Image 1 (cartoon, rainbow, N blue to C red):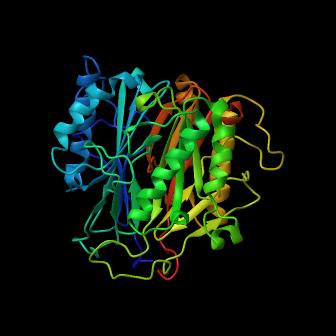
Image 2: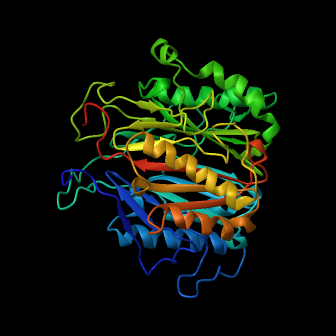
Amino acid sequence: MSGYNAVLARNTGNAPEGIGPYSQSVAFSHYNNLSAQLPIDPASGAVVAGGVKAQAEQCFKNIKAVVQSVDHTLEDVVRLSIFLRNIADAEVVNSVYSAYFPGYVPVVTTVAVAALPMDALVQVEALLSNGVGTIPNAPQAGDLIKTVCNTERAPASALSAQAVAFSHYNNLSAQLPIDPQTGKLVAGGAKEQAAQCLKNIKAILEGMDVPFDDIVKITLFVKNLSDLAQVDQVYKTFFPDSAIARAVAYFPARTVVVASGLPMDALVQIEAVISHGDGTPPQVVEDRHGIVIKANNTPRAPLHPLSTQTVAFSHYNHLSAQLPLNPSTGKLVSGGVKEQAQQCLNNVKAIVESIGHALSDVVKVNVFLADIQDLAAVDEVYTAFFPDGVPARRVVGVSALPENARVQVDVVLANAEGTPPGQ
């Protein structure tokens, strides 16, 4: 196994210690996954005084400290995810963000949620390129190039790139239901807005000569959970997209997040992670489908008709968000949030083990809570599954979860063996 990439968790005293069992940064292969940063002063361990501008400044200071501690710079940030308590604060937070990214801008997702840990007003998360890779004592190509792509056929923003590729993944900015011709929201309700979001994603992919079925993971942000059925009607018309994908009924992994607010007062926003078969220079150009997407489902975890439980590509596996559903009955487990957290993580474990992996391969965990006050109870359960606190983590409070659940968990998994022909 010495020739394989290793999971590399790191922490620095220049950024806040985790308020739970997680690491500040977890690298694997060519990506570094950072835990979401709260506006905590690392010296005091408390949220900084002042309003959202001061808090945003501290979040970015913390990200910069983590990035610099692993010998990288903010130029290596591929994706930023900004979580706000109030979507009206986006403009102020963007002014802070712009000062940290005066030239190159990564892909960005901005969303307001019901609550954040420590009653913060803002939380910022970063995904970082990792050119040297994580094979022990064997640095890989350190000169891999980020490839930024923008097309006039999709909405453009001075604050974000439409797509940033690095190594074998393409990361897209979350797409709003904006007509690229007018720069305004499309007319209609959630159904029309979902269609426009997906059209924008498709336009970006076509601008890079990437097929729609190369999408590995989708995150749906919806303002109202009651709109999900309408969104799904549209969703099914976009996936599967090709005859090959239809033959195997391929759907990407998926997570649904209820937002308390979205930019431009949209009802829907969609984020996508894309496989990038030929990689970025100086990797050898491979056939587009030379490295294959491997989709997998197991009856030991809940099945969903519009998503695959886990989709692997190259050295990562992306799991669909897991609800506290008993896979035998398809119903919510009985009990409170502890029992629900246990079931979510049991489902994650079943999926991970079904593809020959272990929970020690998890590099990132996202936890969604219907009541942020449940975090301590969830962490009691969580620690039993991740006793070393290795995965990076994000926690947000949401106003509702599918199936009226109290907790939902999704994860990103290291895939050391890669997918063919990278085995």
